[in-house]
Image 1: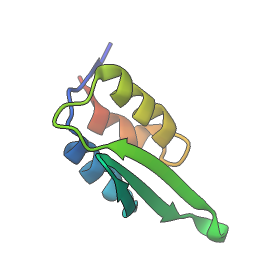
Image 2: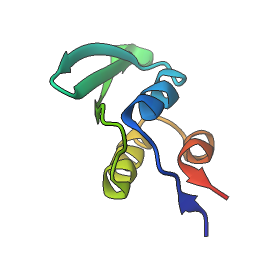
Image 3: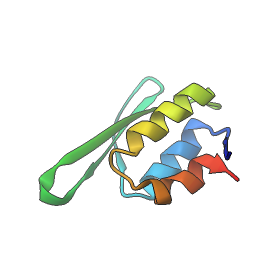
Image 4: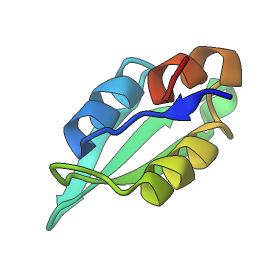
Length: 81
C-alpha cells in the first residue's frame, strides 16, 4: 500500500497550482485557492501554509482535491510507492 508523503503547505500549494488553481486570498496562515471549471463553476480549496502538515490534514486536502482533479493525476503527488 502506498504511503502518504510528508508535505509542507508550500509544497501542497505548488501541487495544486500545477492543476490550474491560483491564490485568491490569504488570511493568517490559510490560503484560499480557486480555479474556474468548464461552464463557469468555481472550484475552491483552503490550504494551511504551515512548515509541515499533519498526515490527517494532508489526507483531508487530498480527498477534497479529488472532487476536482482525477485521482490518477493527483495520487503521485501525495503518495510515495
